[in-house]
Length: 264
Length: 309
Ligand SMILES: [Zn+2]
Image (tube, rainbow over all chains, first blue to last red; front, side, top):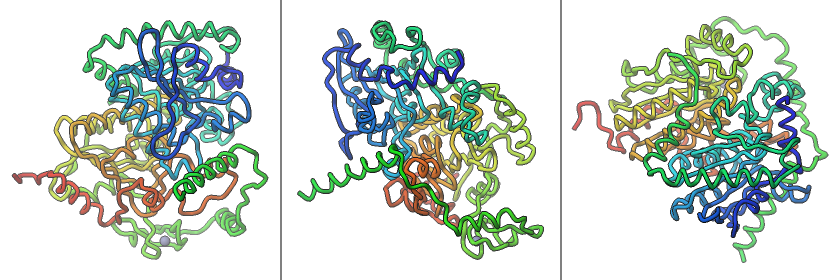
């Protein structure tokens, strides 16, 4: 399948959202709101829940399913306060020794006046630095779009997984084509060279696991993908929980330390 | 009551901003007449005599020598961009810079068409291997690790080499219990390295976290332009964040935002002064004073001069 067809599937309005997975996979989910500083950013949801027998913190970038909901959720493009809410919940998880599971589905961090005024760059940067050191197991899953720094801000985790038809990239294919070729219409071609599909990123060791979806996308059989993911999460959290803290942190450091290709 | 009012005002502002961004606005970005004429002027080939340069700010033709060591326009005080070599020469003690990883060069992780050729031709043109120089030095006699990005090499974009060299600089500083100073300037991610470029943000930030956990000092100096992935990682992680006057600093590009909100942004948007006002920069320092201020900051963090007890 051409890479750009996956982009289209990943962006489908009918594609299951973070809350769909959260409600299906976990029990007793209690949503917690706000960054304790400015406001509650509805583009990011988060809270506490049970994963089988383990209390966990879950966070997701939330897209809407209707125009109305999408305006409320800013089309899943978080403001700085969204990333700060996520960090608050992750630090809370660390305090109470809860593993953290993040669901990523964003075309990118919001590009707007308020976002710049309130330090979009600083908010993302702080998450990258703090997540590198969280003293609990962390897993992130790209469930739709994984757009640039806005996605990475929730993905500096022990494991990074992708759903089969999700994409993860430094920039949208449209943006990439307009920057490099001054022609956003060449997005399809850009998608091919950018290596943004789950399959490509597994090969590049950017992600550890690809979760299968039904033909045409997981909206066609949500239960199949969600159950599969649930099983894998339970299993992996149990593996990560067994690691002593120094090993966990050293392996997370090494996970990101290895990226880059150069000669000397 | 007053609190409630201001809280509500904040929310209104946000939803209006969202709507502006999302609902098709009628207003289109109309370039001003003045700008159009300037653009026309640009098309005409202007004769600039040898050894001279046109100031992009006041548009006077200036003798290059007249810019001096600090590369400042004598007519309007505009700061010209400095390359890494010039920056190092004006900031660190004479002959104290020992460069790390001199020969590191990028490979082509995505086999991106023409990327290797582009790197090669820029290497010949700039006598740089990539967009950053790292090393150790002394400033005012006080030792520190330093990284200086260079916008002359693919707009200082963050690829494997920049990420690796800065990560190693942090690791060296952590091992040797040294402070680190990073001069940033970058257009953002290195597009040709795709996701591998994005991963550099995480890699450097993790190295930065280790250095910070060791109780060591990190100072960033934001220089023109500092944008995109560099802003969203190590540029904003300094214990102390300095900037040069009028530096462009931001996450998203101005044109991207203007396209989203369908409005022209004010000139001061995303300048160092704008970030200072909004609380994201500690201080704006004149270029001529940077070396002196950095030396003072090192002193205030008990970094001893070489040979001092
Ligand atoms: Zn001038």
